[in-house]
Image 1 (cartoon, helix red, strand yellow):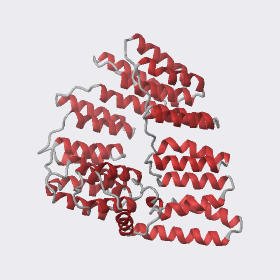
Image 2 (image 1 turned 30 degrees about the horizontal axis):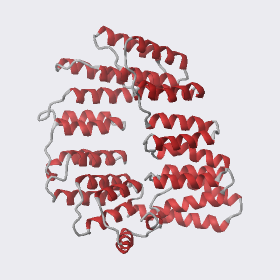
Image 3 (image 1 turned 90 degrees about the vertical axis):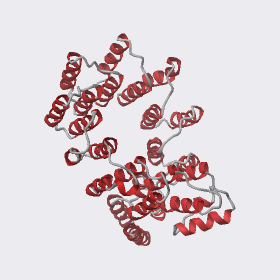
Image 4 (image 1 turned 90 degrees about the horizontal axis):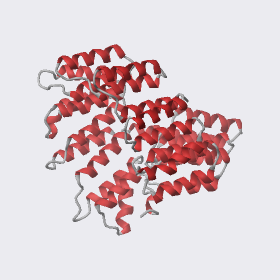
Length: 446
């Protein structure tokens, strides 16, 4: 099946036909694996979905439908996404808050804010009732995507029938912090107290994260002191956020001081904390110290997670230590830690920088074998990186592959590639790239 699905298909029907001819039987595990592998290739994923659904004796679970809806939404195939939601509504109990959460998230990320809010307003059409929990899902999506005022408007629209809870207020406060609207965040906390909810660690940590991102550590310390005064001492998550901010600001000595302080205070350090510390050390160029902690965490009873591996791989690649980076990738397999597409980004950049086509081929195969779907960001990375190193033939190959998989390369990538082809007098290839981009945009309008 892997070899079949490495081919390019012009439609989902062609995918279905190829899979029918393979004689392979669908199972839930297989379909789930394939949808993960093609999570950035809606046409392939939809073909797999239809093929499995048409097989005798096989019925998709709700989770499979939810995965397919997320893929279609991510690929901006909203008409197909809604068709699938309608299909699910005819199946008893299939549409859930998870389903509509994915729908609303994808609409918001595409700038369709009113449509996302309308989806919430119409929950009853799909057999769901409006609730504070459901409203919090929508508000959280809006606030995380820079639309905290829309989240507030939703809360006001439904205040007559839905009551805000702890999470509702924290979503709004955090959203205002994210938007650097600290006055409004404070007003939300005051309103929270008026309604009988005392601001908790989550409420204050949002301020620390926002101030930390601005490198405003004076205000971070003020918030930490306020937490102590209010009888709401920082927890390990708060300190983890603080350590991460200090690392990004290259204030590693302060980060290490905080680390020692919280150890003295009896905190049991966990995976997320060590991940932030390792990331901070890597950003500060202290790779040896990061390695020591990375090797030592298991002795502390802490498992290595994806974030730790990504930080170490990124640091090794920045120093062009390809052997160390690849050893880390292999060690991930030993630790049963599955890589994601961001894990490979620094490795692919390093390959382009070193003009190592052999290593690049290995990594792309490694991604396929680990069911990691290459997204348009990764294709843009490859096109830019290879173009910079004079590997125009390969840059054009990956541009073409992205289009054949139903993706639209960003305009900047397209223009820079065309300019380079023109500069090198590669008129035939330039014409081919222009036709590919036209095709990609036409297909995306469908």
